[in-house]
Length: 259
Ligand code: NAP
Image 1 (tube, protein in one colour):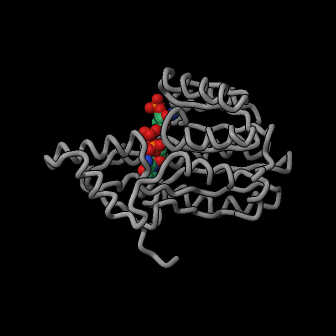
Image 2 (cartoon, protein in one colour):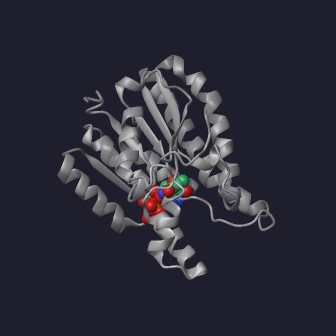
């Protein structure tokens, strides 16, 4: 399918690996020029070089922490006025409700709510002026069904979801859509680290830990960054202009809900 976005420009934050990289690759496959970002320069440069060679698009890299004011300023300066914005960053650490103090919430809100909001606030005016724009925020399945040990994530991402629900209706008249993608378990470095931690704490072999987790997913497997990226590219396509303020769950059926 021709997504109709060849030649457009996208900023994809936190995109040297995992789901962000899946989105960057799928957009590049559709002919979109990219600004990619991550904190670590080596993986970022390697990912960018591979995308340039494979898809023949322009890729600018910015090695910076997008959750800090300086990092965001650097990313936004490199991005200029992109047509497409994909927001992403690492998730907050797990814990217990009784562990978290105000500063823990402020850090989680900064990373997973206020950073995507700041990026949108900076880039939506240009999209509105040009009469076309696409924003996709990578959030989490935990927005629909809480993951108790991820209380910081549940809280911050719920705040972002509320913001998007209202704001997406305000910008839709200008040809700009904002939607969220809610990943369930996907086979990325983050999940590998979580599985390894579970194997260590339980003494179970890693293969057993992964098999047990897959058994909780009706699709019987983990999602891939590639298929996640293809949905992201579709939401950024010409065909998705009537999809506004939605929360798209990609979880292999793991969230047991009718709606
Ligand atoms: P991942 O495989 O660990 O990749 C994270 C990417 O983001 C890397 O490129 C990393 O590079 C970059 N990054 C992290 N923090 C950053 C920051 N502050 N500034 C700039 N770049 C940053 O993670 P993932 O699995 O793709 O997860 C992406 C998001 O989806 C996370 O918020 C995660 O909580 C959420 N999520 C994932 C799953 C899943 O199953 N994978 C499920 C639900 C929710 P550097 O480390 O070099 O910065």
